Image (tube, rainbow, N blue to C red):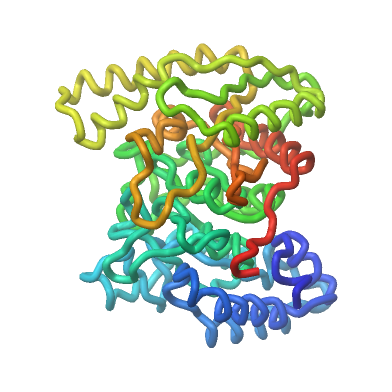
Amino acid sequence: MRDVIGAPAGWLARAILTKKLSSVEVVRAHLEHIHTVNPRLNAVVFATAESAIKEARAADRRNKGKAVLGRLHGVPFTAKDIFNTAGLPTTAGLRMLRGRVPDHDATVVARMRRAGAILIGKTNCPPGGAAEDTWSPLRAGTRNPYDINRSPGVTSSGEAAIIAAGGSPLGLGSDSGGSIRLPAHYCGVAALKPTAGLIPVTGAHGLVGGLSDTRSQVGPMARYVSDLRIALRVLAGPDGLDSGVVPVSAWKAPQLEGLRVAWYADDGMAKPTPAVAATVKAAARALAAAGCNISEERPPSLSEAYQVTLGYWGRTHVDNERLYERWDAFRTALLKFMSRFDVVLSPVAPDIAPLIRVKPVGDHQLSYTVPYSLSGNPCVVVRAGTSPESMPIGVQVVAGNWHDGTALRAARAIERKLGGWRPASVVG
């Protein structure tokens, strides 16, 4: 089953559809792999073995004749433990919710199921799904599959860790300031923070949706950029409940030839390590080789965006009306900058994954990600390099709002040129 573990979700869906593999084989292989690697990682807090195998058998029975099947029919997936799952525990890392079992699915979970995907586990997150590390007093911490002494990132870290380790081909995370993107960078997987207003957050603990928090988005995580594109088509669109979501198709993309790309390796706040800077430069060269027009140029007001975010988090004393004025001014400045570029390429973080429970040096772990949370731009993270410590290094590919497909296409070009995800040696 080694050809199943580590395979793209899209490949698995085709193999199941053509009966080269059964859904039971695929689901069972992933559940067994979780059983093998999870004791060292603590990434999956609840596995759905019995129900998942039952659903896989039903999926195989439906795969006959001219049956109309979903894009992910019979393919396993995991979800961060903030998403409601009908009949299954949803605790969001909180002791007070340890016995909570919702009677309905979050919108994104329901959409994955309608596409034929089979939930095989819920993944670890800090209390309430919101913190700057992975630690949960309910479930303890998750470990990085490339070095179990290192952190897998912030709140969607359980997802990133189990996907990187081969236990799940596709998963659901959430991102307010970098909670999808940093774990993807630290664990060497691919991930999408979509344009604000593209995917509903209904049924995700702590995410209110609508216009109350335009920074927080739900997005897919996978090992391959191609699987993010499949998941985006499954997840996007209004659900009639999240008032902030609009009916826009955001997966179409122009050709890479002539695409205008701005890149920067240093945001002026958190100096990157030489390995991180070299990886961003390599990604820029990969896009140039694909026909893009490359310019080394940094968007304006990134430090202002970081200060606005600190104010939003309540870490600085600031008048709310003035805060939103500054926020809007940053968005306007970035819009003007993006009128000259189709894509912005940058680091995800200044360094590789920090050691467990060790705060990174400086206070700018999120300085590369929070500006694009304020602006709502789509961001794709893809592995593009490896540090001297043999840890993954990702890059952040940002596109204009509602141009998620552009970011995905550029990230796919980087992935093809520089290799993308690689198996984790610690648990491989």
